[in-house]
Image 1 (cartoon, rainbow, N blue to C red):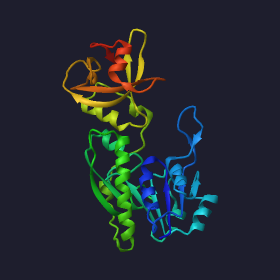
Image 2: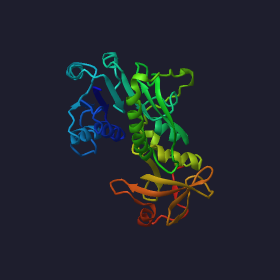
Image 3: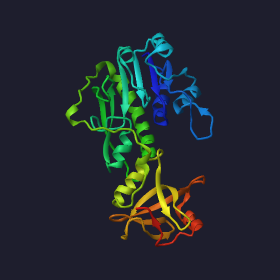
Image 4: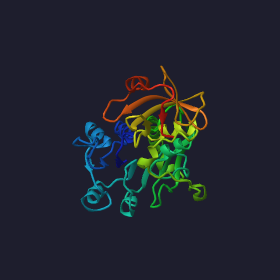
Length: 311
């Protein structure tokens, strides 16, 4: 089958690797987003998919838009029978959607029609969802509304953050895509029920701001949901002035007190009161410093019970 792959982040790499390992589905080429800075001071780097494709010896097209100009002409010249899309990061227009005879197949890490949009895993974690699912569908012009080819249930481990869950989804989705491709001519796509649709827009930087006036479960879910971006931030109130810290590794623990109050510092981390309940912050990162066990940061700041985070 003449196959072209579209993808950009690390979540798409397992699918690319599995397809490349199969002679009948090895991509003719890979289209991905252009190089970008991965850190504030770093030079532009290829996307994870671009780097993986190069390592696999596949032709790579780094394109601002696949819908027009030389990128579209290069795609047409490949004459794909199917295009596989995993987190590409560009809206596909009719010229691309109608090009392959079997259409554009997309892996989406939710149980569609729930959580249509760019951040399905993050939004589900934010809402405390555990029982979710994974979907392979055919793309149409309406956002994530195309007919479904395959779905599987997926339990999102509440001990994992969104970054870890996206990596798990990528591995599972790779196998699902192979199953669909092997049976593609015989599959009967099932339409989605638009009336049941919910949406998962991209996260914004304020989504990472912690408010300990929320329940402990809500605080923990927010910390998990915003990894690896925008990351969870809390403000520690100190005599020398407020200090912004990045927070990782939440764990629900017993405890009550005024929201934002440090109840104790122990080997597990820093226990902070919420409304209600308490959460143990197991790792912290001060601005410009490495990520460390929370107890080490507390010792460095001489942080003790009674200290206060902004609620």
